[in-house]
Image (cartoon, rainbow, N blue to C red):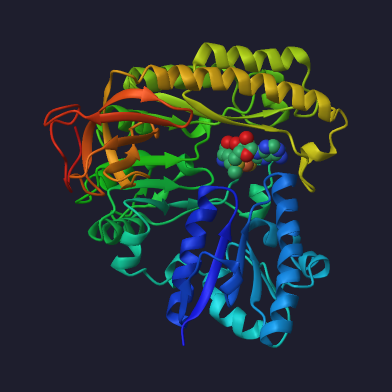
Length: 464
Ligand code: SAM
Ligand code: SF4
Protein backbone atom coordinates (compact mmCIF):
# COMPACT_ATOMS: atom_id res chain seq x y z
CA UNK A 1 0.00 0.00 0.00
CA UNK A 2 1.22 3.52 -0.82
CA UNK A 3 2.32 5.64 2.11
CA UNK A 4 1.98 9.42 2.12
CA UNK A 5 4.69 11.98 2.88
CA UNK A 6 4.08 15.65 3.62
CA UNK A 7 7.17 17.87 3.30
CA UNK A 8 6.88 21.43 4.61
CA UNK A 9 9.78 23.62 3.60
CA UNK A 10 10.83 26.91 5.19
CA UNK A 11 13.37 29.51 4.06
CA UNK A 12 15.54 29.69 0.97
CA UNK A 13 15.55 28.10 -2.49
CA UNK A 14 18.18 25.60 -1.31
CA UNK A 15 15.55 24.20 1.04
CA UNK A 16 12.89 24.12 -1.69
CA UNK A 17 15.31 22.08 -3.82
CA UNK A 18 16.22 19.79 -0.90
CA UNK A 19 12.51 19.18 -0.19
CA UNK A 20 12.04 17.84 -3.71
CA UNK A 21 15.16 15.66 -3.39
CA UNK A 22 13.81 14.20 -0.12
CA UNK A 23 10.55 13.32 -1.89
CA UNK A 24 12.66 11.65 -4.64
CA UNK A 25 14.61 9.59 -2.07
CA UNK A 26 11.36 8.45 -0.48
CA UNK A 27 9.51 7.61 -3.73
CA UNK A 28 11.24 4.19 -4.22
CA UNK A 29 10.23 3.39 -0.61
CA UNK A 30 6.57 3.63 -1.66
CA UNK A 31 5.91 7.20 -0.51
CA UNK A 32 3.73 9.55 -2.55
CA UNK A 33 3.55 13.26 -1.77
CA UNK A 34 0.53 14.84 -0.11
CA UNK A 35 -0.29 18.49 0.58
CA UNK A 36 -1.83 17.82 3.94
CA UNK A 37 -0.21 16.85 7.22
CA UNK A 38 -3.52 15.39 8.43
CA UNK A 39 -3.45 12.34 6.16
CA UNK A 40 0.35 11.86 6.03
CA UNK A 41 2.19 8.79 7.35
CA UNK A 42 5.41 10.78 7.38
CA UNK A 43 5.77 14.51 8.09
CA UNK A 44 9.06 16.26 7.28
CA UNK A 45 9.70 19.84 8.40
CA UNK A 46 12.56 21.14 6.28
CA UNK A 47 13.67 23.98 8.49
CA UNK A 48 15.46 27.33 8.30
CA UNK A 49 17.76 28.76 11.00
CA UNK A 50 18.75 32.05 9.38
CA UNK A 51 16.80 34.27 11.80
CA UNK A 52 15.42 33.59 15.26
CA UNK A 53 11.82 33.91 14.03
CA UNK A 54 12.40 31.20 11.44
CA UNK A 55 13.63 28.74 14.10
CA UNK A 56 10.81 29.62 16.53
CA UNK A 57 8.21 28.95 13.81
CA UNK A 58 9.47 25.36 13.69
CA UNK A 59 8.98 24.85 17.42
CA UNK A 60 5.43 26.20 17.30
CA UNK A 61 4.64 23.93 14.35
CA UNK A 62 6.07 20.99 16.31
CA UNK A 63 3.75 21.91 19.22
CA UNK A 64 0.75 21.68 16.85
CA UNK A 65 2.00 18.39 15.40
CA UNK A 66 2.32 16.91 18.88
CA UNK A 67 -1.40 17.52 19.48
CA UNK A 68 -2.26 16.02 16.11
CA UNK A 69 -0.03 13.00 16.75
CA UNK A 70 -1.75 12.33 20.11
CA UNK A 71 -5.21 12.71 18.55
CA UNK A 72 -4.41 10.35 15.68
CA UNK A 73 -2.90 7.78 18.04
CA UNK A 74 -6.12 7.88 20.10
CA UNK A 75 -8.43 7.76 17.06
CA UNK A 76 -6.55 5.49 14.61
CA UNK A 77 -4.19 3.56 16.87
CA UNK A 78 -1.18 4.79 14.85
CA UNK A 79 0.58 8.09 14.41
CA UNK A 80 2.66 9.73 11.70
CA UNK A 81 6.46 9.69 11.93
CA UNK A 82 7.79 13.22 12.41
CA UNK A 83 11.14 14.29 10.97
CA UNK A 84 12.96 17.60 11.44
CA UNK A 85 15.40 18.26 8.57
CA UNK A 86 17.32 21.33 7.33
CA UNK A 87 19.35 23.95 9.18
CA UNK A 88 17.53 23.95 12.55
CA UNK A 89 18.17 20.19 12.62
CA UNK A 90 21.85 20.79 11.92
CA UNK A 91 22.21 23.61 14.47
CA UNK A 92 20.16 22.19 17.33
CA UNK A 93 20.54 18.42 16.88
CA UNK A 94 19.54 16.51 20.02
CA UNK A 95 18.09 19.67 21.62
CA UNK A 96 15.09 19.23 19.30
CA UNK A 97 14.36 15.78 20.76
CA UNK A 98 14.42 17.34 24.25
CA UNK A 99 12.19 20.30 23.35
CA UNK A 100 9.79 18.48 21.02
CA UNK A 101 8.70 15.03 22.23
CA UNK A 102 6.73 14.33 19.03
CA UNK A 103 9.88 14.23 16.90
CA UNK A 104 11.18 10.80 15.81
CA UNK A 105 14.15 11.78 13.65
CA UNK A 106 16.45 14.80 13.29
CA UNK A 107 18.43 14.85 10.04
CA UNK A 108 20.89 17.52 8.80
CA UNK A 109 21.02 18.83 5.21
CA UNK A 110 24.03 16.69 4.33
CA UNK A 111 22.45 13.36 5.34
CA UNK A 112 18.98 13.29 3.80
CA UNK A 113 20.07 10.78 1.13
CA UNK A 114 20.17 8.29 4.06
CA UNK A 115 16.50 8.92 4.94
CA UNK A 116 15.24 5.35 4.25
CA UNK A 117 17.83 3.78 6.59
CA UNK A 118 17.33 6.49 9.22
CA UNK A 119 13.54 6.02 9.11
CA UNK A 120 13.96 2.28 9.62
CA UNK A 121 16.13 3.00 12.66
CA UNK A 122 13.65 5.60 13.95
CA UNK A 123 11.02 2.85 14.26
CA UNK A 124 13.08 1.45 17.16
CA UNK A 125 14.53 4.59 18.75
CA UNK A 126 14.62 8.38 18.33
CA UNK A 127 17.51 9.27 16.00
CA UNK A 128 19.77 12.30 15.36
CA UNK A 129 22.05 12.40 12.29
CA UNK A 130 23.82 15.72 11.73
CA UNK A 131 27.07 14.36 10.31
CA UNK A 132 28.88 15.88 7.35
CA UNK A 133 29.55 12.57 5.56
CA UNK A 134 32.53 12.19 3.23
CA UNK A 135 30.47 10.78 0.34
CA UNK A 136 28.70 13.15 -2.03
CA UNK A 137 25.00 13.01 -1.24
CA UNK A 138 24.18 13.98 -4.83
CA UNK A 139 25.65 10.62 -5.97
CA UNK A 140 23.07 8.83 -3.84
CA UNK A 141 19.95 10.69 -4.90
CA UNK A 142 17.56 8.89 -7.25
CA UNK A 143 16.44 10.79 -10.35
CA UNK A 144 12.76 11.84 -10.38
CA UNK A 145 10.56 10.43 -13.17
CA UNK A 146 9.82 12.67 -16.22
CA UNK A 147 6.18 12.87 -15.05
CA UNK A 148 7.26 14.14 -11.65
CA UNK A 149 9.63 16.69 -13.19
CA UNK A 150 6.80 17.95 -15.43
CA UNK A 151 4.41 18.16 -12.50
CA UNK A 152 6.90 20.39 -10.67
CA UNK A 153 6.76 22.97 -13.44
CA UNK A 154 8.73 24.42 -16.33
CA UNK A 155 11.05 26.41 -14.08
CA UNK A 156 13.43 24.34 -11.95
CA UNK A 157 16.10 24.91 -9.33
CA UNK A 158 19.43 23.18 -9.86
CA UNK A 159 21.94 23.04 -6.99
CA UNK A 160 25.50 23.57 -8.23
CA UNK A 161 27.24 24.63 -5.02
CA UNK A 162 26.68 24.24 -1.30
CA UNK A 163 28.08 25.73 1.87
CA UNK A 164 30.01 28.91 2.51
CA UNK A 165 33.51 29.88 3.65
CA UNK A 166 32.83 33.62 3.91
CA UNK A 167 31.87 33.78 7.60
CA UNK A 168 29.93 37.02 7.63
CA UNK A 169 29.73 37.75 11.35
CA UNK A 170 25.90 37.65 11.47
CA UNK A 171 25.33 34.44 9.54
CA UNK A 172 24.79 30.79 10.56
CA UNK A 173 25.17 29.32 7.06
CA UNK A 174 28.88 28.37 7.35
CA UNK A 175 28.00 26.44 10.52
CA UNK A 176 24.78 24.76 9.34
CA UNK A 177 25.70 24.09 5.70
CA UNK A 178 29.43 23.56 6.15
CA UNK A 179 32.40 24.40 3.94
CA UNK A 180 31.93 25.52 0.37
CA UNK A 181 31.81 22.71 -2.20
CA UNK A 182 31.06 22.83 -5.93
CA UNK A 183 29.48 19.92 -7.83
CA UNK A 184 31.43 18.70 -10.87
CA UNK A 185 30.11 20.32 -14.07
CA UNK A 186 29.46 16.98 -15.81
CA UNK A 187 27.03 15.91 -13.07
CA UNK A 188 25.22 19.26 -13.20
CA UNK A 189 24.92 19.05 -16.98
CA UNK A 190 23.58 15.48 -16.80
CA UNK A 191 20.91 16.62 -14.33
CA UNK A 192 20.15 19.67 -16.51
CA UNK A 193 19.70 17.51 -19.62
CA UNK A 194 17.35 15.15 -17.76
CA UNK A 195 15.24 18.06 -16.52
CA UNK A 196 15.15 19.75 -19.94
CA UNK A 197 14.19 16.49 -21.69
CA UNK A 198 11.16 16.32 -19.38
CA UNK A 199 10.02 19.83 -20.34
CA UNK A 200 11.91 22.26 -18.06
CA UNK A 201 12.52 25.59 -19.89
CA UNK A 202 14.24 27.64 -17.17
CA UNK A 203 16.95 26.84 -14.63
CA UNK A 204 17.76 28.87 -11.58
CA UNK A 205 21.14 27.51 -10.54
CA UNK A 206 21.44 27.81 -6.81
CA UNK A 207 23.99 27.73 -4.02
CA UNK A 208 24.52 29.54 -0.72
CA UNK A 209 27.30 31.36 -2.49
CA UNK A 210 26.54 30.43 -6.07
CA UNK A 211 29.01 32.69 -7.87
CA UNK A 212 31.88 31.24 -5.82
CA UNK A 213 31.29 28.14 -8.00
CA UNK A 214 34.57 26.51 -8.98
CA UNK A 215 33.65 22.98 -10.04
CA UNK A 216 35.69 20.47 -11.97
CA UNK A 217 34.93 20.74 -15.69
CA UNK A 218 34.71 17.73 -18.03
CA UNK A 219 38.07 18.97 -19.42
CA UNK A 220 39.71 18.53 -16.00
CA UNK A 221 40.00 22.32 -15.49
CA UNK A 222 38.21 24.37 -12.88
CA UNK A 223 35.08 25.96 -14.29
CA UNK A 224 33.69 29.29 -13.13
CA UNK A 225 29.97 30.05 -12.97
CA UNK A 226 30.26 32.07 -16.19
CA UNK A 227 31.70 29.07 -18.02
CA UNK A 228 29.05 26.73 -16.61
CA UNK A 229 26.24 29.10 -17.67
CA UNK A 230 27.51 29.03 -21.26
CA UNK A 231 27.20 25.24 -21.32
CA UNK A 232 23.81 25.26 -19.61
CA UNK A 233 22.52 27.71 -22.24
CA UNK A 234 23.31 25.08 -24.87
CA UNK A 235 21.17 22.39 -23.25
CA UNK A 236 18.39 21.71 -25.80
CA UNK A 237 15.04 23.11 -24.66
CA UNK A 238 16.50 25.58 -22.16
CA UNK A 239 15.46 29.16 -22.86
CA UNK A 240 16.21 30.94 -19.60
CA UNK A 241 18.91 30.92 -16.96
CA UNK A 242 19.13 32.61 -13.58
CA UNK A 243 21.44 32.19 -10.60
CA UNK A 244 21.15 32.95 -6.90
CA UNK A 245 22.49 33.83 -4.30
CA UNK A 246 25.64 35.72 -5.12
CA UNK A 247 28.29 37.50 -3.13
CA UNK A 248 29.69 40.81 -4.49
CA UNK A 249 33.28 39.58 -4.07
CA UNK A 250 32.67 36.72 -6.50
CA UNK A 251 31.24 38.78 -9.39
CA UNK A 252 34.22 37.97 -11.65
CA UNK A 253 34.88 39.06 -15.25
CA UNK A 254 33.59 35.75 -16.68
CA UNK A 255 30.25 36.18 -14.99
CA UNK A 256 29.84 39.81 -15.97
CA UNK A 257 30.74 38.87 -19.57
CA UNK A 258 28.09 36.12 -19.47
CA UNK A 259 25.50 38.84 -18.84
CA UNK A 260 26.68 40.50 -22.05
CA UNK A 261 27.02 37.35 -24.18
CA UNK A 262 24.20 35.02 -23.16
CA UNK A 263 20.73 35.92 -24.31
CA UNK A 264 19.37 33.12 -22.12
CA UNK A 265 20.82 34.68 -18.97
CA UNK A 266 17.96 36.82 -17.70
CA UNK A 267 18.70 40.53 -17.14
CA UNK A 268 18.06 40.32 -13.42
CA UNK A 269 20.71 40.12 -10.70
CA UNK A 270 20.13 39.39 -7.03
CA UNK A 271 23.25 40.71 -5.33
CA UNK A 272 22.98 41.11 -1.54
CA UNK A 273 24.74 44.20 -0.18
CA UNK A 274 23.40 44.08 3.43
CA UNK A 275 24.41 47.67 4.29
CA UNK A 276 25.48 50.92 2.63
CA UNK A 277 27.93 51.84 5.42
CA UNK A 278 31.59 50.86 5.10
CA UNK A 279 31.92 50.72 8.89
CA UNK A 280 29.05 48.23 9.16
CA UNK A 281 30.22 46.24 6.13
CA UNK A 282 33.60 45.85 7.87
CA UNK A 283 31.90 44.75 11.13
CA UNK A 284 29.90 42.24 9.10
CA UNK A 285 33.13 40.89 7.57
CA UNK A 286 31.64 41.33 4.10
CA UNK A 287 35.08 42.11 2.68
CA UNK A 288 33.78 44.70 0.22
CA UNK A 289 33.02 48.41 0.53
CA UNK A 290 30.05 50.42 -0.63
CA UNK A 291 32.15 51.71 -3.59
CA UNK A 292 33.20 48.17 -4.53
CA UNK A 293 29.50 47.31 -4.73
CA UNK A 294 28.70 50.39 -6.82
CA UNK A 295 31.56 49.58 -9.22
CA UNK A 296 30.30 46.00 -9.70
CA UNK A 297 26.83 47.33 -10.49
CA UNK A 298 28.29 49.83 -12.97
CA UNK A 299 30.29 47.11 -14.73
CA UNK A 300 27.31 44.76 -14.87
CA UNK A 301 25.08 47.55 -16.21
CA UNK A 302 27.70 48.36 -18.84
CA UNK A 303 27.66 44.70 -19.92
CA UNK A 304 23.86 44.42 -19.88
CA UNK A 305 22.21 47.86 -19.87
CA UNK A 306 18.68 46.50 -19.31
CA UNK A 307 19.67 44.57 -16.17
CA UNK A 308 17.47 45.02 -13.08
CA UNK A 309 18.81 44.64 -9.57
CA UNK A 310 17.67 43.04 -6.38
CA UNK A 311 19.38 42.80 -3.01
CA UNK A 312 19.25 41.77 0.66
CA UNK A 313 19.57 44.28 3.51
CA UNK A 314 20.03 43.92 7.25
CA UNK A 315 19.13 46.85 9.52
CA UNK A 316 20.18 47.21 13.14
CA UNK A 317 23.44 45.28 12.92
CA UNK A 318 25.37 45.85 16.21
CA UNK A 319 26.83 49.36 16.33
CA UNK A 320 24.71 50.70 13.43
CA UNK A 321 24.14 54.44 13.99
CA UNK A 322 21.60 56.75 12.36
CA UNK A 323 24.40 57.94 10.05
CA UNK A 324 25.22 54.35 9.01
CA UNK A 325 21.56 53.72 8.29
CA UNK A 326 21.40 56.94 6.24
CA UNK A 327 24.26 55.52 4.13
CA UNK A 328 22.09 52.48 3.42
CA UNK A 329 19.13 54.65 2.38
CA UNK A 330 21.45 56.70 0.18
CA UNK A 331 22.73 53.55 -1.53
CA UNK A 332 19.14 52.50 -2.20
CA UNK A 333 18.28 55.90 -3.70
CA UNK A 334 21.43 55.95 -5.84
CA UNK A 335 21.08 52.38 -7.13
CA UNK A 336 17.36 51.86 -7.74
CA UNK A 337 16.38 48.26 -6.93
CA UNK A 338 13.60 46.47 -8.81
CA UNK A 339 12.93 44.43 -5.68
CA UNK A 340 14.68 43.50 -2.43
CA UNK A 341 14.51 41.57 0.83
CA UNK A 342 15.15 43.40 4.07
CA UNK A 343 15.45 42.11 7.61
CA UNK A 344 16.02 43.25 11.16
CA UNK A 345 19.33 41.91 12.44
CA UNK A 346 18.64 38.74 14.42
CA UNK A 347 21.43 37.56 16.77
CA UNK A 348 22.25 33.92 16.02
CA UNK A 349 23.86 31.82 18.75
CA UNK A 350 27.49 30.95 18.00
CA UNK A 351 28.06 33.79 15.49
CA UNK A 352 30.53 36.61 16.30
CA UNK A 353 27.97 39.43 15.90
CA UNK A 354 25.72 37.90 18.57
CA UNK A 355 28.52 38.59 21.10
CA UNK A 356 29.05 42.23 20.05
CA UNK A 357 28.25 44.67 22.83
CA UNK A 358 26.52 47.45 20.90
CA UNK A 359 23.28 45.61 20.09
CA UNK A 360 20.65 47.96 18.62
CA UNK A 361 17.34 48.24 20.51
CA UNK A 362 14.37 46.48 18.94
CA UNK A 363 12.30 49.67 18.46
CA UNK A 364 15.16 51.34 16.57
CA UNK A 365 15.51 48.26 14.33
CA UNK A 366 11.75 48.32 13.64
CA UNK A 367 11.74 52.02 12.73
CA UNK A 368 14.73 51.61 10.40
CA UNK A 369 13.19 48.54 8.75
CA UNK A 370 9.94 50.43 8.11
CA UNK A 371 11.82 53.39 6.57
CA UNK A 372 13.96 51.11 4.39
CA UNK A 373 10.98 49.06 3.24
CA UNK A 374 9.10 52.23 2.28
CA UNK A 375 12.03 53.33 0.11
CA UNK A 376 12.40 49.87 -1.47
CA UNK A 377 8.66 49.54 -2.10
CA UNK A 378 8.59 52.92 -3.83
CA UNK A 379 11.36 51.75 -6.16
CA UNK A 380 9.64 48.41 -6.79
CA UNK A 381 6.39 50.10 -7.77
CA UNK A 382 8.24 52.58 -9.95
CA UNK A 383 9.95 49.68 -11.72
CA UNK A 384 6.64 47.87 -12.23
CA UNK A 385 4.83 50.99 -13.46
CA UNK A 386 7.59 51.51 -16.02
CA UNK A 387 6.58 48.14 -17.53
CA UNK A 388 3.22 49.49 -18.74
CA UNK A 389 3.29 49.86 -22.52
CA UNK A 390 6.34 47.61 -22.87
CA UNK A 391 6.29 44.15 -24.44
CA UNK A 392 7.98 41.35 -22.51
CA UNK A 393 8.76 37.76 -23.31
CA UNK A 394 6.79 35.76 -20.78
CA UNK A 395 7.53 32.16 -19.87
CA UNK A 396 4.09 30.58 -19.38
CA UNK A 397 4.13 28.62 -16.10
CA UNK A 398 0.51 27.78 -15.35
CA UNK A 399 -3.14 28.52 -15.98
CA UNK A 400 -4.42 31.74 -14.39
CA UNK A 401 -7.29 31.98 -11.93
CA UNK A 402 -9.95 32.69 -14.55
CA UNK A 403 -10.93 30.62 -17.58
CA UNK A 404 -8.66 31.39 -20.54
CA UNK A 405 -6.16 33.27 -18.38
CA UNK A 406 -2.51 32.20 -18.32
CA UNK A 407 0.23 33.18 -15.87
CA UNK A 408 3.98 33.35 -16.22
CA UNK A 409 7.09 35.39 -15.52
CA UNK A 410 8.73 38.33 -17.24
CA UNK A 411 12.53 38.35 -17.66
CA UNK A 412 12.56 40.44 -14.45
CA UNK A 413 10.77 37.75 -12.40
CA UNK A 414 7.53 39.76 -12.35
CA UNK A 415 4.36 37.65 -12.30
CA UNK A 416 2.40 38.36 -15.50
CA UNK A 417 -1.22 37.39 -16.21
CA UNK A 418 -2.82 37.57 -19.64
CA UNK A 419 -5.81 36.15 -21.51
CA UNK A 420 -5.11 33.53 -24.13
CA UNK A 421 -6.46 30.03 -24.28
CA UNK A 422 -4.12 28.98 -27.07
CA UNK A 423 -0.69 29.11 -25.55
CA UNK A 424 0.68 26.14 -23.64
CA UNK A 425 2.60 25.89 -20.39
CA UNK A 426 6.29 26.14 -21.29
CA UNK A 427 5.74 28.50 -24.25
CA UNK A 428 7.47 31.85 -24.31
CA UNK A 429 5.17 34.51 -25.68
CA UNK A 430 5.30 38.25 -26.25
CA UNK A 431 2.92 40.07 -23.90
CA UNK A 432 2.23 43.79 -23.93
CA UNK A 433 1.81 45.05 -20.37
CA UNK A 434 -1.34 47.11 -19.94
CA UNK A 435 -1.72 47.40 -16.16
CA UNK A 436 0.08 46.78 -12.87
CA UNK A 437 -1.39 45.34 -9.69
CA UNK A 438 0.24 45.14 -6.24
CA UNK A 439 1.97 41.84 -7.03
CA UNK A 440 1.37 41.13 -10.72
CA UNK A 441 1.45 42.71 -14.12
CA UNK A 442 -1.46 42.29 -16.52
CA UNK A 443 -1.24 42.31 -20.29
CA UNK A 444 -2.35 41.00 -23.65
CA UNK A 445 -0.63 38.84 -26.23
CA UNK A 446 1.23 41.12 -28.58
CA UNK A 447 -0.16 39.46 -31.76
CA UNK A 448 2.15 37.28 -33.75
CA UNK A 449 5.06 39.57 -33.30
CA UNK A 450 6.42 41.14 -30.17
CA UNK A 451 9.53 41.11 -28.10
CA UNK A 452 10.29 37.56 -29.17
CA UNK A 453 8.60 37.62 -32.55
CA UNK A 454 6.41 34.55 -32.09
CA UNK A 455 5.62 31.84 -29.60
CA UNK A 456 8.90 30.13 -28.78
CA UNK A 457 8.64 26.41 -28.15
CA UNK A 458 11.63 24.42 -26.91
CA UNK A 459 14.44 26.22 -28.67
CA UNK A 460 17.94 25.04 -27.94
CA UNK A 461 21.15 27.07 -28.16
CA UNK A 462 20.86 30.54 -26.74
CA UNK A 463 24.19 32.24 -27.18
CA UNK A 464 23.56 35.63 -28.76
N1 SAM B 1 24.82 34.11 0.70
C1 SAM B 1 24.02 35.23 0.64
C2 SAM B 1 24.88 36.50 0.80
O1 SAM B 1 26.05 36.44 0.81
O2 SAM B 1 24.34 37.56 0.98
C3 SAM B 1 22.87 35.23 1.61
C4 SAM B 1 22.38 34.03 2.26
S1 SAM B 1 21.21 34.23 3.55
C5 SAM B 1 20.42 32.67 3.38
C6 SAM B 1 19.94 35.30 2.99
C7 SAM B 1 19.86 36.61 3.70
O3 SAM B 1 19.45 36.47 5.04
C8 SAM B 1 21.18 37.36 3.81
O4 SAM B 1 21.54 37.99 2.63
C9 SAM B 1 20.90 38.35 4.92
O5 SAM B 1 20.35 39.54 4.42
C10 SAM B 1 19.86 37.61 5.75
N2 SAM B 1 20.43 37.20 7.03
C11 SAM B 1 21.38 36.28 7.26
N3 SAM B 1 21.67 36.21 8.58
C12 SAM B 1 20.86 37.12 9.20
C13 SAM B 1 20.70 37.53 10.55
N4 SAM B 1 21.43 37.01 11.53
N5 SAM B 1 19.79 38.48 10.82
C14 SAM B 1 19.05 39.03 9.82
N6 SAM B 1 19.16 38.68 8.55
C15 SAM B 1 20.05 37.74 8.21
FE1 SF4 C 1 26.06 33.87 5.08
FE2 SF4 C 1 26.10 34.69 2.52
FE3 SF4 C 1 27.88 35.66 4.27
FE4 SF4 C 1 28.06 33.10 3.48
S1 SF4 C 1 28.32 34.95 2.22
S2 SF4 C 1 28.29 33.83 5.56
S3 SF4 C 1 25.90 32.58 3.27
S4 SF4 C 1 25.64 35.94 4.29
